[in-house]
Length: 128
Image (cartoon, rainbow, N blue to C red; front, top):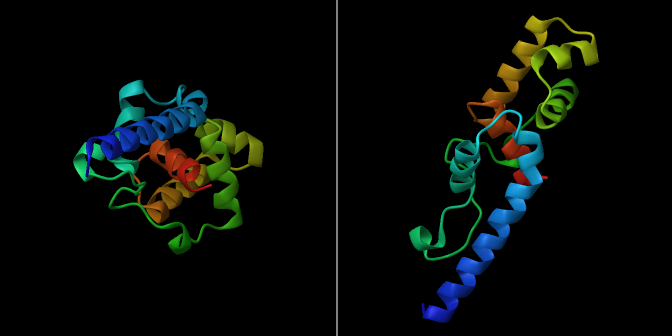
């Protein structure tokens, strides 16, 4: 791989990284630090130096979009999670108990193969 190709890949990497950062930063700003976002971006998109190619990949534990089967209610709750809503806000919006919302959130995280609401929101943005 010559120097021009490496520079081009680095430029593309930085453009994609900045686009993802802008797309999710408003929502995630309320629930994640900048370091959290950078960590997630590195999981979703390794640096060109580490891979010698620009490619978007999911974290090893994250589910592929075709393998995820969320119920209609889980999809609605995932939308609210990506909007930055708290469990309490989600419970009010859907007239559910807080316990029910927590159960739905836990099921969503399990099905997506992620461990936090931030990762769930990032998973959704990266795939839709």
